[in-house]
Image 1 (cartoon, helix red, strand yellow):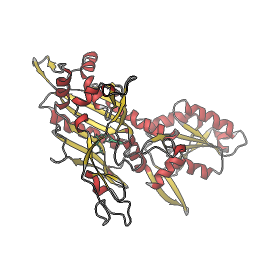
Image 2 (spheres, helix red, strand yellow; image 1 turned 180 degrees about the vertical axis):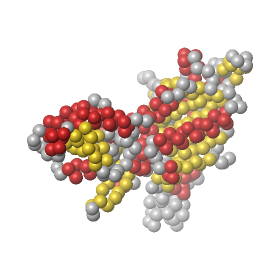
Image 3 (cartoon, protein in one colour; image 1 turned 90 degrees about the vertical axis):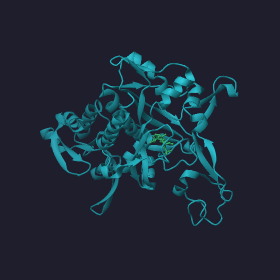
Image 4 (tube, helix red, strand yellow; image 1 turned 120 degrees about the horizontal axis):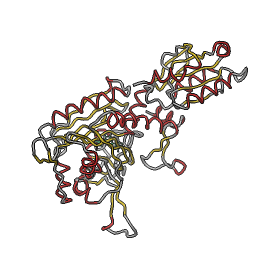
Length: 437
Ligand code: ATP
């Protein structure tokens, strides 16, 4: 992880927020390459759910919502983590994740195991960020920064249903920021206080919920495979009776094997009619669905798929990172799937003379009309390849003296380091071919 965090900073993937002021705890900024990578992850999610399906609609709800929403959802009363403090070292830990934590005293052990540890009893800590709306800082004007995007979907369920003329079963998908005042954030962008979620709520007839639940599990795992993640590092974790949220009928997490252990990257939940029935009760607005074919009215059940855009981006980075020895020299490669790679093509003139830069510049501009590309004419060609390997650029196109004679360029493949020649005028169609889904 340390190597990855340092590479991410050095090459412009992720920076610490407000770094020149010493940083802000567990808040991160995405640099030029990071923003492309995360955007590719989000675009692929959006395309697979909203654009490629007829039964899922998109939504972009506001971050600030009516405070009653969070009473209805149960967040005001119950969105808490149990917190313990150590009176000796003054550290704070999540009581339910003590075994994952380390006491800062040496030798470092699980908090509570060191002779000097003096832990308080657990107390509940609400994770929602509060602020005030309007000029008065009083309890009547409290609003929350949403801790999840899902509630924006529930409260818009009727609006989307009627305006889109969808019929049940159908889903609503949304990508947006969420905020949680996490007690023990960490592991880089794995657990942060401001993050983005990619959530989809699928509304179904009660009784058909488990069938759809199973279908969505399969679809979502397939999506992670299509991102290029190593299947052996993905697994299911089923929530046992002690773990299952009180409203959920069934829940599975997709977990990834990070350097710090197996951890959740996405949750798939059968939330029954809990959320809609609570919003119906708290808002006083009927949220039932009338099914024309059967003449029945019912509150739909909901199957939710909930992934973190930042967490999936971290997964893609971790999965892609590798070091290998080539000719006694260490090569660092981010072996991204080309579809998520931030830069698709490097364009490199072999030398800075003989008209090669002019041809390479034209090629670079031609590629840039379709795909992010990078032009590099500085230093030995081998070093330039390495620089592109390190940011995961799948292909480099080198303009050399043969280009002058036969209008061909060298394509150098990142993973195999093999080279082949293709026509200069065919580079963009060649790229389109490689990047086709
Ligand atoms: P955890 O148990 O790790 O706190 P959770 O079960 O509370 O997570 P959910 O509420 O199910 O998480 O959120 C769905 C997804 O949102 C998670 O799978 C994760 O990808 C992402 N997510 C949740 N909390 C954070 C966070 N603090 N930072 C980054 N991503 C997060």
